[in-house]
Image (cartoon, rainbow, N blue to C red):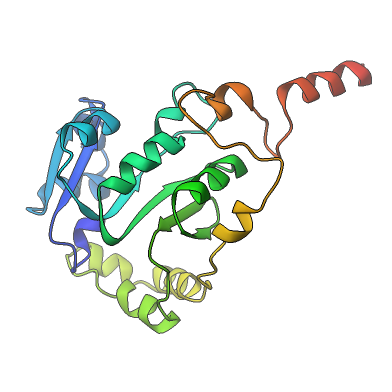
Length: 217
């Protein structure tokens, strides 16, 4: 759907699974991404592709991140990787990704980027402040131009969702998280979310969970 957003001139998509195009061919809304002359698909590991293309700079990087406790999630959530993403941003550029509910992920991002705004589990991070007005956000949401995406976005359901998004205040949380205690900065070495700090929903460690189960049995 990003390809249907009028201001976007080009999209580089990096996908590790070569079977992806065949899978999404069964989902018409998603498969339309290949119809756009804006898009270019690269089959590679995202981190490796960035390191192989050090001169490529972007206004926006969107990372589709797996659950933070899963194997190899560190490759996409560590401060090391965030520094790689930061080096590929143009001035004022933004990285947008899913924290999958981990406070350690937000804390880590706050050590790398100056500004963070949050929407549910997702965070946008940048070294430039997020200062768009609600009207500017709303106006930008109306700039999807390609059919049938445009028709879908004109529906009252999407317009109501857009209005709700536009009314979300862009509150910077980076300073607050930099001052938080009890959180861990994720690095390639400590693999915090998948090894050192593996958790259940709500922040319960597996050890604490098993202890509770044992005491209650």
